[in-house]
Length: 359
Figure 1 (cartoon, one colour):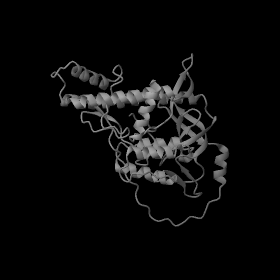
Figure 2: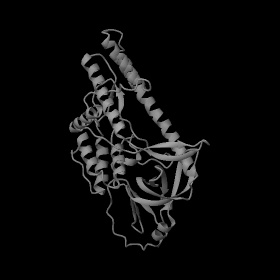
Figure 3: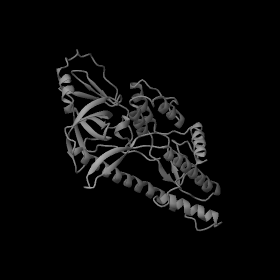
Figure 4: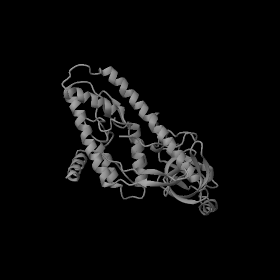
């Protein structure tokens, strides 16, 4: 049956070296009064995986059809990760006692081995998020250069022509091929302009969706101010730690001024903040208990403070003798597309939050 076919396709894909990030997604529940009633996780069921496997197979088939015909087409490509991002990822993994195979140019299979090796850890979600931020963003192009994460030589978007324009373009090209028309195809320059435009508008749409969801989540938290939440640190910046609240899947900022009576030094290479007096350290993956103190409904930003009992312990903690520190090397720079989670250039406090990237 179809389930057996999908399972065979999935097993073949992983055997070929494809990777699969299983990051949680959320759904906003709106009540009858128009207010946010709940923020709940979206369960990834067998049906979702079955549809996904069949869609991937259809996309590969469409890409190969166009590639074999010799006519220009639009492909969904995913470039190899940049060396500096791999270096930052390895530094982050080393802090957690993890390593990744593949040397300077790891393949998708190397990332997948890491994902499987860390899947049962309590910080597995954070590790996968950092892995995602180390990867390039997928885009549309007329050059069929392959898809890194899926490890496909030929890949395009074909299955959603009613909501994605690149899929509609691919359908039109294949229709001409099926009908045997040898003329009236868009030339490569025209298709490249379309591909670049679609890549840009996709990012713009993602930004809009992200902002709406962030503000809706902020509205939800505004009704739960001062409540105690358990959260996990998902990113470290010079001005504080971003904490994702476990129960509601909302991210807020724990500013350095709310971390206790100490001055915290930012270590971007090792993704941590270290107290200069107490030597207390905050790292990505650490679990903290926090309360919501401020919510800005206009921009969706959420400010957190440590639970008072924890804060008192940190303030009373005796200072350890300072050790003589050697001059550290500057942190490796990341490119302008680097987001805060990958240990590269930190964003300012003004622009907080990060988005998932599409395949």
